[in-house]
Length: 220
Image (cartoon, rainbow, N blue to C red; front, side):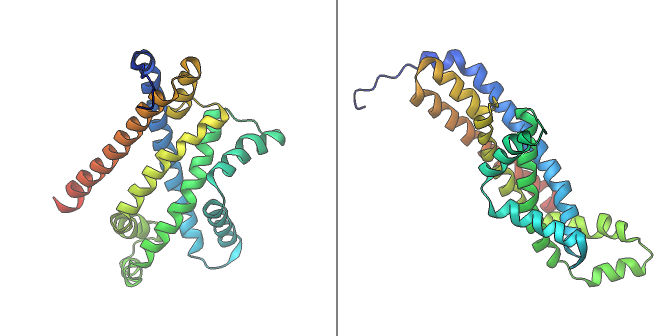
C-alpha cells in the first residue's frame, strides 16, 4: 500500500519489550484506580458536609482534576514539583498523576451514586445503633458500588489509556516501550499497529471481565 514495505520481523523481536510495557501499564492502572478510589471516597464524604475547609479542599481537588488536561497534571507533578525540590521517579510521578485524575472523576461519579441512595437508609441504620462509619461501610457503600459499577469501569478504561502519557516523562509503559523500540528500527507504523492492538485487547478484556463480574456479583 502506497509503496510501503512492512517488516514485521523487527516487531516480533521487540515483542517481549512491548509485553513488559503492557504489564507496567496494567499494574500502573490498577494501582492508580485503588488509590483514586480511596481518595475519591474521602472527597465524596467531605463534599457531603457542604461547608468548611474539608468541603473547600474536596471541591478544589475535583475542579482541578476535571477541568485541566491530564497531560498538564503529569507535567506539574513530574516537572513542576521537581522545580520545587520534590523529585519523583517517572513511575511514581505517573502513579500520583493518574491517581489524582482518577480521584477527581470518581468523586463525582460517587457523588451521583450517593444521591440515588435514599437518606432514610442512613437514619434507619443509625436508629438501629449502627455507627456512622458502619452505616457507610455496611449500608451505603455496597449499594453505591452497584449503582456506579459501569461508570467506574469506564474510568478504569480511561485510566488505562491515560497511562500512555507516561511516555513523555520517560516511563517504559506500553507506549513508552513502543516509542523506544521504533526509534531503534524506524518501523513506526508496524510497532504502533501492534501497540494499538494490545491496548484494544486490554480494554476489551476489562470490559468483558467487568460484565462477567457484574453478572456474577449482582445477577447470579
